[in-house]
Amino acid sequence: MRTTRAGGTVAALSALALLAACSTDSSLDDPAVTESAEDDAAAEEGGDEGDAGGEEESSDEWFVQADYDTQDEQRSATFEGDPEQPYLQYIDGEMTDTSEFASEGAKKVCFANASISNPWRQTGWITMNEQLGVLQESGVISEMETRDAQDDDNTQIADIDYFIAEGNCDAFVISPNSTAAITPAVERACDTGKPVVVFDRGVETDCPTTFIHPIGGYAWGIDTAEFLSENLSEGDKVVALRILPGVDVLENRWAAAERIFEENGIEAVDFFTGADPAEIKSILSDELATGEVQGVWMDAGDGAVAAIEAFEDAGQDYPVMTGEDEMSFLRKWEDTGLTGLAPVYSNFQWRTPLLATEMIFAGEEVPTEWVLPQVPITEEERGDFLAANEGMPDGHYAKFGGEDLPGYPQVWQDRVIP
Image (cartoon, rainbow, N blue to C red; front, top):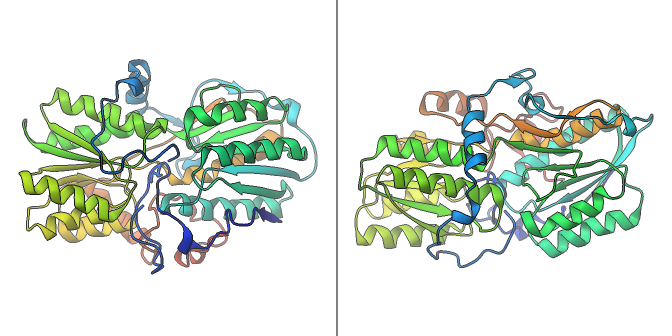
């Protein structure tokens, strides 16, 4: 049984605003949904949108040197586990003893989701539900009751408190809408004594049983800014298109990138776009009207195609660009021949929380901080990922990691949103 709150997870796709998760990108092949997208993103990602299109201030408050250094090292780390199952890989580190949660019988999982308001999150949600079906058939999970906060902190706080008051959750799974605001509610879930699995975006507490995420925003920022700096010259201009403020992984992406641009003498200006293709085109049109733009940096793939089209509309040479592993960017990248990189905020992470609950219900150890692989797609690899995902809609993410699940490829091709 899969239960959702009316008006939440099963809301019509045409009503979804394509804001951003922990990374993400473009459309759903639904004419009612505009092409855009995060993570993704990471995309998708929570918080207030701020002034879309407004140039942003310094990211110093989001920069922690020690975390930057750790994630920089983790980019070349050795991951435990089978590379054919990247959603179960992790960097060796502290483990959490879950023997107290071991018991027989199927269990109920309560999932407080930030949203499925963009293609990155929608792709992950499809994958998560396919994984759920497998665990229901095997008798691990009886049902997953889901409440969708629709990108609103207050709604998600109420959702978590509802689950706590309901009193019949055997485990909590939480994908936070934003970082600081959701922390107290996560702590209240921990206080119930039930296992708490947090994934995608972080919170400011170490109480969860496990926190699951790809390497992180600093790694994304390092990968992308180094790529742009290597392919540009000192004094060149980069326009940075950001989704939303106030989400750790997104802020960390820009905090890392901003410093690398400064170190390499790259002129970088950043704007919040809300992942709105029209806003992205407007920003780039204005910037191109005042001079040349040699590079485009995105903290998610949302609107990557719109960014490229802005250069086409202006009759300008294509920029050096970083997008994401969303299919519309990969296809446009190949069609144009521009110099690009597709960083990822590994979409396959949506499988991991439910697989973690399976381990927890069995009393197995789980990584306290479960760090998943996060490897960008290069030009040399792009063709392989395009071929592997042939037939998938533009809003699909190449590294979704669901190829061995029962509904593959049909449910992702048809964009079946549970």
